[in-house]
Length: 188
Image (cartoon, rainbow, N blue to C red; front, side):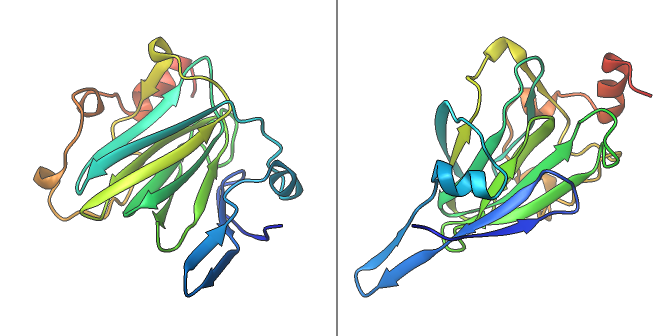
């Protein structure tokens, strides 16, 4: 039923997806996911878990990845606005260590597909945001890894003026750098 608009990104595998929205005086309707339609655009994934989080302005979550149980993710914002980021950690990729960011909001209704092999994070831009995502593997708490959000080697251009205004979890302030990740994995 739905028609999807797909924007490819400069990093292979990442896709920004905008569903067709049917609106009238009552509001709107859209399909956020159809296995058939997503297979047609090259995303033939079996999602096994849906997650949702709520955060206030200035909350930065990330940059996270699963070490041994990587997940493909389809992320979107159902309320508010975030700046969403993926960092390529695929060994041998021409864009290893590069990042891509996109603004996702309840208003623009964009979704972001992030395949296995990427670190992921987001910064809440609105006063409040609800963030929802589908995953192709279950969450394994002992398997979580991360990268420091402000690693200069990665150089994510987060849209904030003052780092003191950010709210991060303790673990998100202590992740290592991309150089640490490469050493740990034996990547030159």
